Length: 265
Image (cartoon, rainbow, N blue to C red; front, side, top):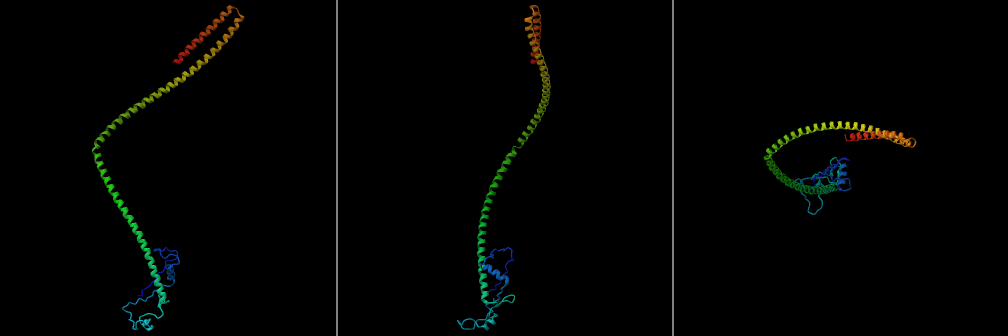
């Protein structure tokens, strides 16, 4: 049977191919697409068997006569394509064969896509099973949580009582902390006062040290003078100098006593 062969035009240059089988190579699909871009063949030779006249020539006599072919609505030399271009039967047959090859290629492509889809379906089914197991586990966890919540609800009154007692203890602790802060402030004030007293005592001690140093220098000078007078004066004059030295020594002793009292204080 002859079939209506209608080649579709390829997509415009640069446009994506939705089915992805035309390509840009030199195969039959690319050749068909390039041919369809110039000539759209419509081999309108699909005359049904019921309308075709039965051959009246003997069997094995060869091809039907031209008149018989013309009476069947066929041109002797070929077919006229859409657009008025004349196409031979051989060219139409070649186009039909190429179209058949193209559809076989597309069938292989679709079978490949079907296999990929089946793999994806299997993967999705496995994920669905995993999701079901996860749902069961979550439901079991939910039951455990509900039971734990019910058990916790029975202890709510005791917890609230503990919270109330804790609030009371916190109030008492706040009062104690306030009292301790006040006492700490008083102690800090007392410490500052004692520091001021210590600074005053340090200043007084420094003055006493300077006085002691000055007295010791005077004593040393007196001893030097006594030693000199012992050589030049008589015993009477020596007794007067010794009395002066003893008086100076008594002054130093009284100063050291007051220093010890100051350090003790």
